[in-house]
Image 1 (tube, rainbow, N blue to C red):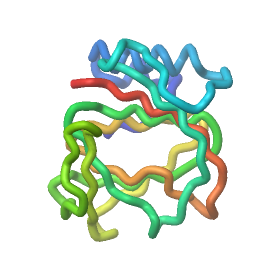
Image 2: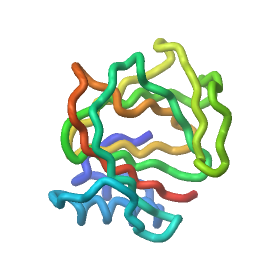
Image 3: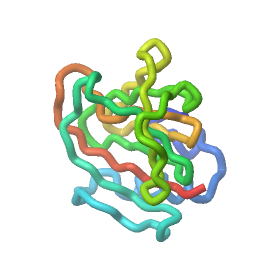
Length: 152
């Protein structure tokens, strides 16, 4: 996992063409009002999911992981915690779905690391990074986020 501000991301992120396209999209979108939904960047190789929701209590969070895509989770407004752990620490609760590229698991809280993201910050999550997004840092509050999916 990599955590950084969007303004610093180009200097810190590995030179991967898909990641670069995703970061360029985020940079060009900063400050623009985007409607919730899917935005094609480079077909199914790189696309964005714009999401608006209220953050959730920690006990409602679900750990997830992916095999085919890297996530760039960028906070447009609000803030949220993302729980992080290595996938080998997860006990599978919902098996992998090939069509949705996702599986879910549980993990003891002692095996997780909370990461706070505020507006303008992002986390890049690789297939080895299990994560529980949408967690409220205090009480549930509105969040706008763009998740860019980058094919491996």
